Image 1 (cartoon, rainbow, N blue to C red):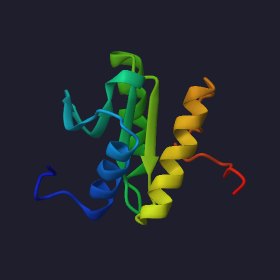
Image 2 (spheres, helix red, strand yellow):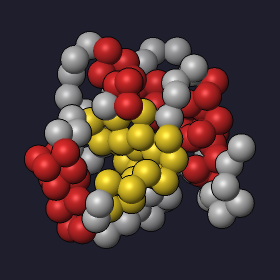
Image 3 (tube, one colour):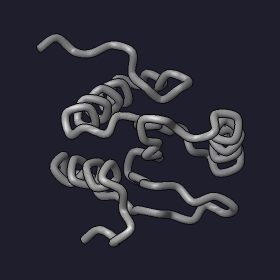
Image 4 (cartoon, rainbow, N blue to C red):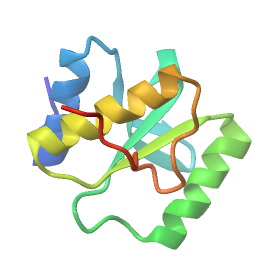
Length: 115
């Protein structure tokens, strides 16, 4: 069950992660930060940034800290607020991870699979 203060986008991400059979924790404290989703079995942090995103400079520092201090290897920022967009972004990112390819710096996969 999702917390009452979840955004629509966070609800879509949680729904898609569950559909994919991935276990996750939400609103995880990684002091001094709180991350939206953590999928421990694949070492993936997912941030629900919304269509406007967060403050890029602050996010870049936080991401660097999480990777350096806590050894997190994969951080995905999702900006899309549609079910299809969230699904596509997660699918593309998970496929890149399964191929041991790094995610792009902005966390948004650049290539969409052929339909």
